Length: 447
Image (cartoon, rainbow, N blue to C red; front, side, top):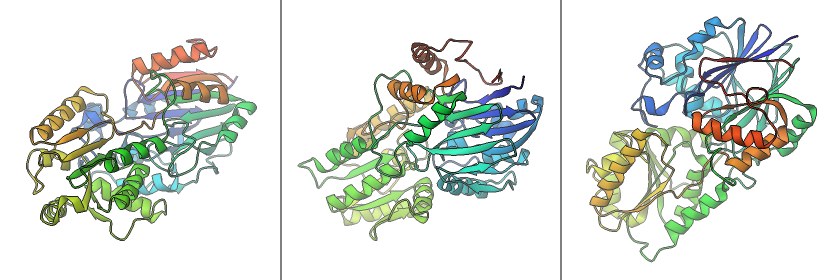
């Protein structure tokens, strides 16, 4: 009897550094190759491009792929589902070890290319294959990957399906069932139901918000929350700064639209803001208005902040990095009084982002908000909706796909436990059809 092996390389003990290998006979497909953001003092503007992979493995910042030496077979492809760093951030450090193409959606491919170009330590020459959602790619004679469109908090995200002679393996990391996304396609429910009807051997799924009851609100809700905070005020002349994830193109696009309604010039600041926005613009995901200003380098950012102070805060809507309180980020420098921008009593700081749940980020964010408040800022936090499925979305996907086996991934033990309880409600049995894996473990499934 042939079996399929699921290797939990990274992301099974924690949030981040996601990497899974699927073993089909003597052929292997790697799914994602990410970084763990809180293990390095890293933020969206940080540089780890000079660090060695072994150093990063030791720090727990990237997956420990040395376990792949013990797995029999040849890696035939590296497949990435979307462009977040916890899914593609380790490619510049690890991909060169595998003689295999990197397959991802067009936007994700553009971000991977940027990552590889910025890498100083290793030379990554793996071919990059851009595959659109809805399309399939033959990796070998016996393995084909299919991309199914799914919304997340970054554009051009997919669920990856590996079709093999022994059954299909569905990899759903990360997703939300948003039926009204502001950019991009809604979930392809027909494709998911079709998979369920044909039969799925195993599904590997994220568990980030599996403990949160109900359904994840749509990105349309976040846009209205932002509009309400920015436009629903009698103090329309005060300074306003928005901070959000640079990779959240739908959110940045909403800010551009609302800035136009406010009669303000949107000013995006930060290396990562420039990187993600320009890639999205070049691929036609968003149109940038003529008056938009984008500054990546620190000296240009400070020059722009000086201009805002001189010409009047009421004319501009700065959008900056730093919502997690990352050291050296623009908002932290503003809070510390290290830029020409002076926070004055009544200025609004809008956090269109959640706090990443780790002790370090919570402490950094607390310090940032306290410093801003001491300068007189008004704080609007959690003007945000998640990009991750809540419990009832997980239930819905599980019932649609109906896999024989389900493996929680992308999360810590508490997140996996919440998912397993939900799966048991759907009839799965722990250790038989729902499987708890830890980093470094291998599960073999018979068709």
